[in-house]
Length: 467
Ligand code: AMP
Ligand code: ZN
Image (cartoon, rainbow, N blue to C red; front, side, top):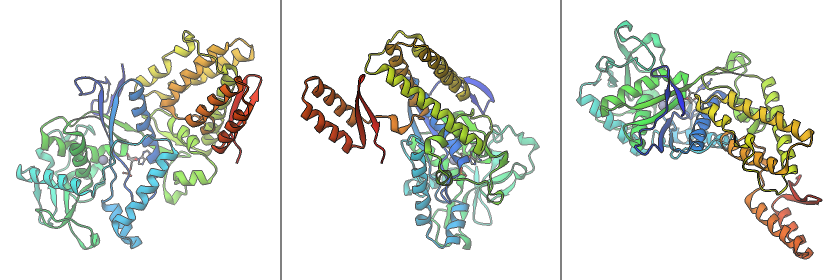
């Protein structure tokens, strides 16, 4: 049974999706605001979400995940104006880089990546605001902007565990990101002003643009429906962003918006908050330029439980690299030993569920990784003593295959592509039939795909050709 620490109740709750068949999981993950390159803190959150999705899939669920692209808000407008580039062109560039970084980190694609400025999303935002205004839950103020009246939503503050009675009398908040102290009615629609330049849409309340919070409510509802199973983001999104999403969505639909709220703690760099002024602000590109690979970065950002702060350090990166090398060596040893032997399906360590059971416990990745390294340690000892059977090694490789579906940390060089596997099979058959000409031709074909094949006493071995 999977359990999650739900930010709403602050308790560990057994996971049960809304789907009556108990199979499909609807998941909404707040995506990037594309006003600059995403930093490693953002990717810590996206990697946690990837781990969550992959573990749910390993447990048999089908995950329908939406990740939005925030391509209009205070920051995107400000930066595109400063760069003197039209908003769409400006955000497009950072959205493209975001997808490149996601691939480098082996993060599975969401099913849909809606952008806030897609016409169907703007239309949904306007429709939701219109409903709220009609119900007098929202109002247009003298400044032309439309605000959500928080005292019309008694549950406001529940997610952040704030006591509404203790809050100051509500004032109006134009900015998307405000601090807890300055609580008040938040903007749903921002009336156009000169700083917006050409950015704006016509609406029943005049020209303007949506607030950040209504963007996510509208995209989540339009694509996933009024009720979703899991909503994630970094802890800084919890208030006011997610609190506002609940208020907007539930006021419009009358239904409980989200069943499980999962928030990842922040990433620090060398013990400090990441900031440009401290010179400790890193993007994925920065780390790749320093010689780290996508999988090393992924592993370094993945290995701390999501509810704990992660202190990113360069020592930690080196440690991550060493752990991965250990893993690579172990896999190579297992492959050498297993050769092509069929796996021993009864071999207990390889049928162990403890890796997945650890993840069932609110994604306890550090316990799950401890299981992996325990396995590496014990089987290395057995191999040192010549006590591991080839069929057992093959069984461990099958176990690893499942584990790596979730972790995605296997060295790329070692994954033999299906096309190469197929040629290797044909070549093995050709050699058995003593058809040396065909065998050589197949070797050339394999080499054309960037792989070198060697014939050893244990059969053929393919390695990635050094280029
Ligand atoms: P943004 O592009 O600022 O909207 O942020 C995208 C995602 O990254 C959100 O889920 C944020 O909560 C998350 N995030 C921002 N900064 C950090 C950080 N330092 N550590 C972890 N997650 C973060
Ligand atoms: Zn959001």
